[in-house]
Length: 246
Image (cartoon, rainbow, N blue to C red; front, top):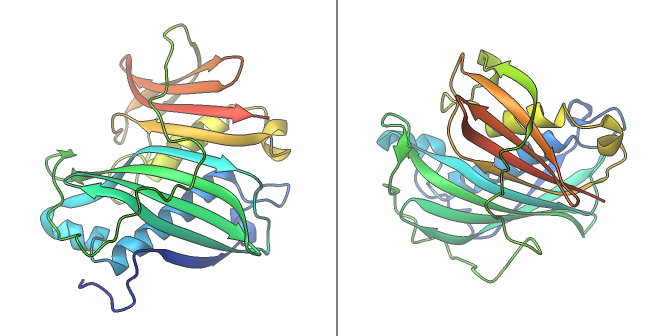
């Protein structure tokens, strides 16, 4: 699709929080928080002519590689949230995108995300085939206090769970959806910590894609300042998650 006449380099989009997105405490699930961020990023890409549909003409798609989210509070059922997004950097096959969530004018969530252009036929990264010079970049406009990082994965980690990837785990790019990795790990966390909103930041690293019928192991390593999960397939790490609780 061509660039929309409504395109702006900073996009703000409103979303209503409905009951299907909420946990038993009435607040937005952490996985649904990630979905809101990703949907807003997708909406901005669509207005700017670099959406999934545009990129599929060249067998390309944006794939999330790293993500950091810092949380002051979670929105609740019935809230209308404003998600604002802009791009910090964009060149060749890589992009860093910032996102913020506001409720009633107050910032409650900040996120920094790192995306790669992925060829869905060759199953590897490559340079973006579409023009993107119309996006104004904001390298100094940060949404988080700390940037995303490479999560330090320890080898002495306990195996908590084994899982086989099923159809409901796959997305339109035909691999396990990034939110699914997060969901699998959160299911192994003490529910009280999540329901009492003790999670104030988390980071995710996506390292290798998973496909239908892949069997994986989920590991946990509890440190003084963070809980680290990793997902492995045949002893190779596919995903890492770092949770910081208050």
